[in-house]
Length: 133
Image 1 (cartoon, one colour):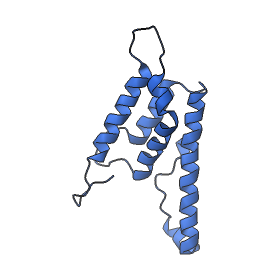
Image 2 (cartoon, one colour):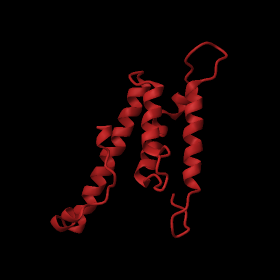
Image 3 (cartoon, helix red, strand yellow):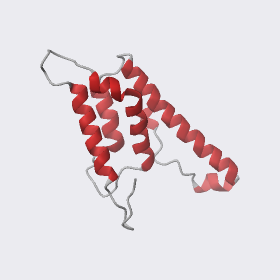
């Protein structure tokens, strides 16, 4: 399901011709709600130890990580997905220790990485000079 994450919630020209404006708004809301529910589901799988740190790190990287062609920044809905995921698992991720006592917490390192990338995205500006997020 995660691999099928839409690149945009905006309706296609075909959908614009097919649906009324109210129906389009409802369709966009359904897409967004489904995607955010998937993020909550992924978070709950992690909380029940069914997903590892590595998987969570890869999901967040796929959503907001730097791409090779850094010309395009992350889409707004992907940033919102990461925020939804971190809301669900942030506390547990931050406080999870795996390994020997005294070793750095891998969850804490992930939270630091995610936070740094979100702060970086917060300061990005679009072509018009306005903040993107």
